[in-house]
Image (cartoon, rainbow, N blue to C red; front, side, top):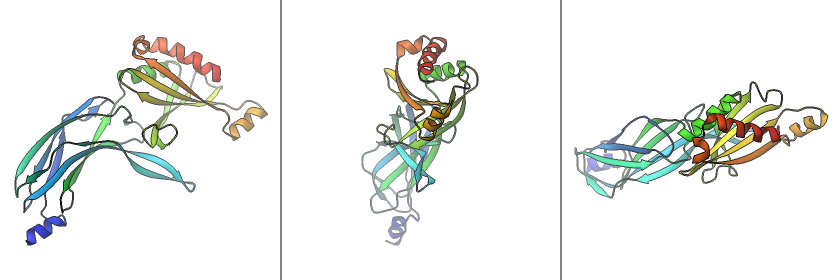
Length: 255
C-alpha cells in the first residue's frame, strides 16, 4: 500500500525512454521509433502513451517578448494496458511529421515529447530533440533566393493568428538583399506552407524608404507587401534557376 502511495506521487513509479530511428527529418517524413518502459515498484494502469511534436515561439505581451511552447501534432500510440512492477516493455510507433513543423534553424528547437498517462499517478515523460531540415521543394526556394543575393539573417517562430493557419504561430525566415535588390529592399521575409502536392510561399517584401513619402509609409508599416505564390511540384522540378527568375519578377513588381 505504501509503495502504491509513493508511485502515485512519482516515487518508484514507471520510467520511460523514447528511442527514435534517427535524429534528422524533413517535414512530412515518417518518424519511427520505440518507447521503452520499465515498471516501478508496483503495477500501474497506463491509459495511453502520447507523443507530441513541440517547438517554441515568441509572443509579444505588454511591450515584452515571451517564449511559449507550441504543440504541432499529438499522437496516441497505445491502447490502455497494465505495466507490472519491474516489467520491461517496448511499444513501437510511427507517425508523419506535420508539414508545418518549423525548420531547426535560428531559434526554433523541435522535440518529440513522450508521456505515459498513468491512472492515479504522476505521468512520466521524455523529451527528444530532433533536427528538421528543408524538404526538396523548400531547398529549391532557398537556393533560388540565394541566387538572387538574399542572405538569411534570422529564422524565428512568432505568434501570428492571421498567418499561422492551424497553428498559433508561423516560422519567418528573414533575408537581407546583398546584390540585385540591395538599396531597394530593407528585408525579405519568407514563410512556407507545404503540402504533398504543392508549396505555398508567402513573401513579405519590405521596401526601403526613398523620399519623404516613403519615409512616412515606413513609419506606419505601409511599406510592406504580402505576396502569396503557389508553386506546384512541376514548377519546382524546373530547378532553382528557373524559380529565381520567377521570384525576381514578382519581387521587382513590389520593390
